[in-house]
Amino acid sequence: MLNELVIASHNQGKITEFKEMLAPFGVKVYAASDLNLPDVEETGTTFAENAALKAETLANISGKPCLADDSGLCVDALGGRPGVYSARYAPNRDFNKAMTMLVDELKACGNPDWSAHFSCVLALKQPGHPVRFYEGRVNGKIIAERRGSEGFGFDPVFVPDGFDRTFAEMTHAEKAGISHRGRAVAAFLQKEFNASRL
Image (cartoon, rainbow, N blue to C red; front, side):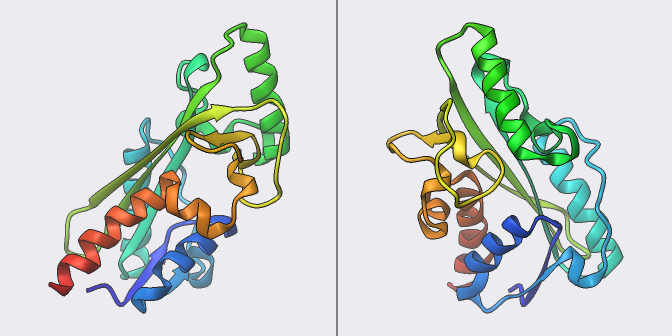
């Protein structure tokens, strides 16, 4: 069983979500910044490639089990973009600009279907073991007007299917229960903790 885990991210929103999700299992969670670990350049072309690259790099440096994720927003009318480039969609990772650019691009494309989904792939690298992957996805749509102040990234313009609120209008607990990252983490917890407790 995992007793400690490095989260391969410097994104405080992600770190907070992972700490909350892992708290019931007594895992000592480190952010990459806690151990002065570097940012790893995402040079892969898929979420799985990027997650594995980050997990393997930081596990090798730290000598500790490392969990990395790569996630992004895929918009149907834009051919699946921004996808793996979601964090780099706007200059300096300014998501206010990114949301403006996204809505402007959707308005300009002329397609009234603003269906989209968030995807997340988790990669777990434990020293001496191959990388294991866990995936999660949530379908929804993009809206033109931002709503809510919770969450991060594109949350204020994404409404998940079956809801009339954006991710940014939900509590952390509500979002974690249905989000792409929440679903990927649930699969991770089922395999890495529940199975080992049988």
